[in-house]
Structures are given as structure tokens and as C-alpha cells.
Image (cartoon, rainbow, N blue to C red; front, side, top):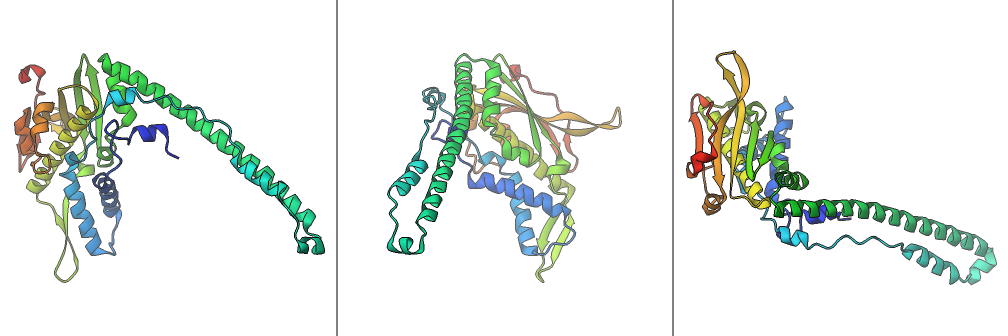
Length: 331
């Protein structure tokens, strides 16, 4: 049974698109990568290499999968769910069978008429019970659907009135960042006065493989340490791809034209000698500029040049802490 929330998440341009193949592959790639890391011996070497390459490509393609722009007007005009009425389809059918039962010639000879009538009466009770159960389930679903409908109507009004707390609830309701979470990123939002500030936390140790996997000409597995420069470049592409994806999702759901996203990761603080969270990329994304990009062809890291941003990155040493950009920098 399709729930109201499920329907609201998938119908037309008003809600998020049904899970596409790319999103499904992202989930599967992340799962297989994590499983692969735990294995000492790999039975299917060719498949393991394909899984590895698919996962690496997924890391650089997070930005390509996104919700279509939401039509909040369409959601606003969505009718209230209808309370289900009691139905007796199964009971009626069973009752008809009982009322129209006529013993056959052999029923009379072998004395099976009473047994068959008792069986039909039992089936009638079962059918009535099933009708009741179906009604109770429909009623439970209706109450959930009504709750979702009421919440969405409240969210719509909040978005029309540009209430920051309702912006956040819209994102929480549809939760468009599931597959990013599968890959190891966490997202925090700070929304106030139509300004959206996003902290994107990424743990490179959990996300980026530190090895390369390939199959030799003799069919054997080749696993070697990934060069530090290649690791850093893959990490940079993943971060920038995730930044673009988060921006696209926000613009799909909320009527805003720019947001600030700060990618945060653990860096060694030379003053304390401890790893501490610090911004490594800070960017103000404009929806107008973002919509002009060919997202299927861009290099995620290079695409940051289209926006006001700060990123201190070197292939060998990786990222260094940066100061967050301010909205004043955009104007």
C-alpha cells in the first residue's frame, strides 16, 4: 500500500523523484565497499574490482543525483486524505457462497452436506474478520496520512511566510540526503532570516579508500596503497561533489537564491597536537550560477571557481583550514 508520505515524495514535480538507478547504485556501492573492507579473502576478483571502481566513481558523482524542483503550490492544493469506510467485500462473497450452496448428489449420498455448510460458515467468520482487520489497517494508515497532510500544509504556510524553522522542517520531512549519509557525510543546518548556513561533516577515513584494486593479466588480485596525491584529489572531488549536491537539494525544496556551505573535516591543530574539526572548503552557492552549469560534465573541484569560495588545497599535503566566506563577500 502506498502511504500518503510515500506518494507525496514521488508524485510529479511536487515531490522528490522516485529513487533512481544512480541513487540505488550509490547505496549499493557504499554497502559493498564497506563489506569489502572487512573481507580477508575475495572470491570473485573481477566483481570486487568492478565494485571498487563503481564506488570510486560514485564518490565523484554525488552531485549528479538530485530531486526535481518542488511545486509547493501543488502540495498546497493536494486534497485532504479521505477517511476509509467499512467494507464487507470478503464477507459478502463468503455469505453469497453460503446462501447459494446446494448439496450435490454425492454430498447427499456420502453425508457431507453438513460438513460443507459448517466449513462455509467458518469461512464466513474468517472473511468478516479479514474485512475488520483491513478496515483497522486502513484507518491506521489514514491517520498517518492525515498527520502527514496536516504537517505538509503547515510547512507550505511556513514557506509562503518565509519562516526559517519551517524551511528546516521541509528538509527534515523529505530527507533528500539519504544517499550522502550512506557514504559517510553528516549535515547540520542553521537557518535564520532567510539565510541558510550548512555544515557538511566528512570523515575521509570512512569514505575514501586508501588503496587501489585491480586485476592482473593472470587474473589475480592486485591491491596496493593509493598514492597520497591521488587520495587527496579523490577526497577533494568527493567533498566538492557533495557540496554541489547539497546545494541542489536545498534549491529544489526552498525558495532561496543563495546558501553558504562549509565542508568540515578533522585536521591536526599544531597548537594542541589534537585532531579538531575545521572548515576546509567554504562556498556561497548561487542558484542562478548553479543552474547554468552542465553538471554531467563538470569537474567537481574545478567547479568551485564559479562561486565565491575559500579552499586551500595541495595534491601532496591535502587541505588546510580556511576562514569561512561571508555573505558580504558575495555582494
